[in-house]
Image (cartoon, rainbow, N blue to C red):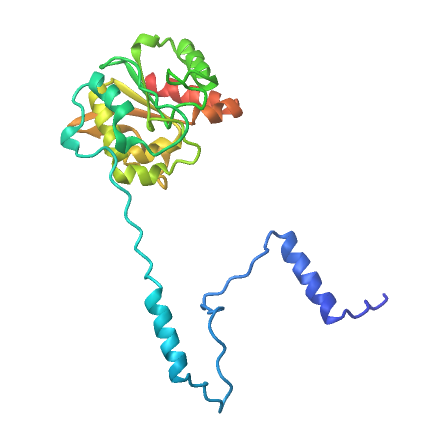
Amino acid sequence: MDARPSQSLADQLSAAADWWREAGVDLAFTDEPNSWLADPAPDAGEQPASKSAGDNAALAASAARTPAAAPTPSQPPIGGDPANWPTDLESFAAWWLAEPSLDEGGSRPRIAPRGQAGARLMILVPAPEAEDTEMLLSGPQGRLLESFLAAADVAADDVYLAAGLPRHMAFADIPEMAQRGLGAITLHHIGLAAPERVLVMGRDVLPLLGHNLAQSPVSLRKINHEGRSIPALQGRSLELMLQRPATRSRFWQNWLDWTG
């Protein structure tokens, strides 16, 4: 057998890099910190150059002219004082559309929840659809939900429909907003609606219910609030179900198990 020709060091390094790149490894890490922006250390025996009195005075004057960076103020709480929150659904709907601290900005209109207290089922979605202008879930997601409710033999009058956010927001930081008070408002909203069951559509809703995203969604079995425990089921988002029809069959089976 012919001996393989020897490779140069450059060829060997290139081959090793190709190997790890094919394996999906394109970065290297080390546990030891390295200060890449630090000034280079002086050579042995070299003394750092001393600054003249004029240089020091110029630096001091520059520092005096440069204001210190102001600390970033913490975000204001959402909802204001809980003592002033609405105590019935009709008042809550009006407050939901008008309370200034609920407004995180955006071009979409605020959309009110719809339904009656004591409904057979409360459906909670992360936010209104992008197409919503006057009524919650009036676009493709809403039509998919209507098809599901018809198949499940749940009348529209038996459903209370609500969103975790007042308006459609493309990049809302829901966990952060939950910490600032939106989670407590969501639980207060559920308490006012007092449904028999709660159907949570989408993982983005979970932080509003005090549910850590690191936990398995199946661990959400009940919503406990002010001494009341309401059965809950978490499903995939309506947006995802529109994109992946296979998720609908799994959700349907979970629904049958939950309601059976």
